[in-house]
Every structure is written in structure tokens, then in C-alpha cells.
Amino acid sequence: MNRESIYGLTSEQVTTWLLERGHKKGRAAQVWDWLYRKRVTEFSEMSDVNKDCLRLLEEHFHIQTLTEHTKQESADGTVKFLFTLKDGNLIETVLMRHKYGLSVCVTTQVGCNIGCSFCASGLLKKDRDLSSGEIVEQIMKVQLHLDQVGKGEKVSHIVIMGIGEPFDNFTNMVDFLEIVKDQKGLEIGPRHITVSTSGLANKIYEFADLKLQVNLAISLHAPNDELRTRIMKINRAIPLEKLMPAIEYYIEKSNRRITLEYILLKDVNDQREHAEELAELIGGMRAYVNLIPYNPVDEHSQYQRSEEETVLAFYDILKKNGINCGIRIEHGTDIDAACGQLRSKQMNQA
Image (cartoon, rainbow, N blue to C red; front, top):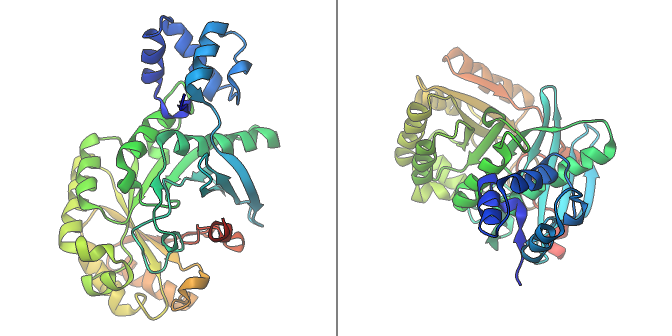
């Protein structure tokens, strides 16, 4: 029998599945508690669940489908995990330490077809989507790492910004959100979760209609179509005239502020005129601009990091034009775990 990850089931689905097989609702609550509160890694560890139920679970599900390949720790406390999937594919997941808590950056696809010219993830074309269970298990693996460290720490925030385009794996990503938000499980509040997209406008409308109350970030990176198309090929299919109304719709529907991500590339999109144009493009919008220092990728040697003086000048122009903005604090650059760097060198050798 082809067993699936039990982490891919919501609490309601676990309950329904067990009820259909003659078990009581309370049994499902026990199983859920063992998975997410006690965090067992084998069904046999569920000591108060009867043997018939355990045998049934064993026959149909896995708890663990990811194995840790390597783990690297940065000088700033960031930890990057390279996981091997059941089919042998490799993915990366990153744990980051902030003043407000512990955040995990999860991957949603093996490879990426968006192909942003500054990003390492797109160097490997998409092989497949991850299941919702494989995305959830990344959080569980990181939490188990924290449990083993023994400081009583807990994952408090999630960013869906790893390898892949989350909105290109929409259904599994939404199921993942429901599972991690469950108040009897991991209990990660929607306002502690951020989903990032390169700008799939039709999915932004669909996401807005779900009213999930999670944070949405858009990879913008340029203030006009000519420049955005040059660095992000997705802009050919979804130009700003299609993307900006979708963003406005999301803001109106959710009544939430949106984050616009903007990686600064030296002499490409970081000049005064670009800042002025960006301010004009988003003026009056309920948005926050996250200015991101470019992180080096060997294969994208045409790009360089903007000078600090240039970054500050760009920031000042936005502020003077009434734009809410900030400069992102970097995490894990020394282990290739920072924004735009995810795609382990080992992946090319696998």
C-alpha cells in the first residue's frame, strides 16, 4: 500500500477518517495531540491509543517522510536544513532567530519555474509540487530540532518564501496553512504567517476571497514593466497593469496592509529615479516596502549588492514621499541561507 504523510491531513480529516473506520471522535483528538503537542515520530509511541487504531494508522500513513541530509548553523544563529524527500529529491528549510520569536522559512516546490534572474532557487527547474504533508513536516523537523536542543523554544512564525512559488502549489499551500494554524496543534496564529508570491494575479484574487488573515508579500523588485520584465520573466505574462489591481483587491478584501519586496541590485533598480517611480506607483496604497540587500549567487554574477549609501538614499526618497518602508535585516548569508540564496550546492550534485 502507498502510504501518505499523516501531516497532510487537517484535524477534521483525521477525525472523519477514523470515524469512517469505527473509531470515536475522542480517538482522533488523541492522535492529533500525539502528533503536534507530544510530537512523536512513530505511531507506536502513542501509548494511550489502542492497538487496532495504531495498526490502521501504520498501514495507511507515515509520520516521517523527510530525512535530514545536512544541517548548517550561521554565526547569527540561523540554521539551514537540507532534507531528503522519499523520492530522493532535496529541499531546504531555514530557521531564523528574531527579537519577536523563531521563524521558519518553508519550501513549497522541488525547484522553481518562475526563473527570477537574481534568485538561486530558479536555477533548478520545477520537478514537482510538495504535498501539504511535506510542507508541514518541515515545521515539525525544525521543532524537533528545537526540542532536542532543550531550551523549551517553539516555532512562533512561518514565512512561505523558500524554494518554489507558493501560489503555483495553491491547494497544498492552503491546506498547510489550515493545519499549522490549528489551535489544538501547532497553534501558529495567521498574523504570524507570511506568504510570498512573485505575482500570480489570479491566485491573489482567490487568496483574498479565502479571508485567511495571513500576511501577503509580493516580490515586486522594479517600478516599471520594462525593468521588471528584464529581471523577472513572469512580468511578461503578468505585467504591472494586471498585478497592481490584484494587490488593491487583496488590500480591500482583507483590510490588511501588504508587503512589497524590493531587492536592490547595484546600478539596475537602485537609482534615485527608480525610487521616485516606485513611490509614484504605490502612493496612497496600504503597503510596506521591504528593501532587501542583494545576496550573492555564484551563477548570477551580473548582479552586485548596492552600496550602503545608495540603499539609504533609496530609503530616504521613499520616506520623503510618504511610503512606509524598511531595510531587511539579513539572516544566514554566510551559509547561503539568506533571501534569494536557497538552492543548496548539494542539489546540483544529487
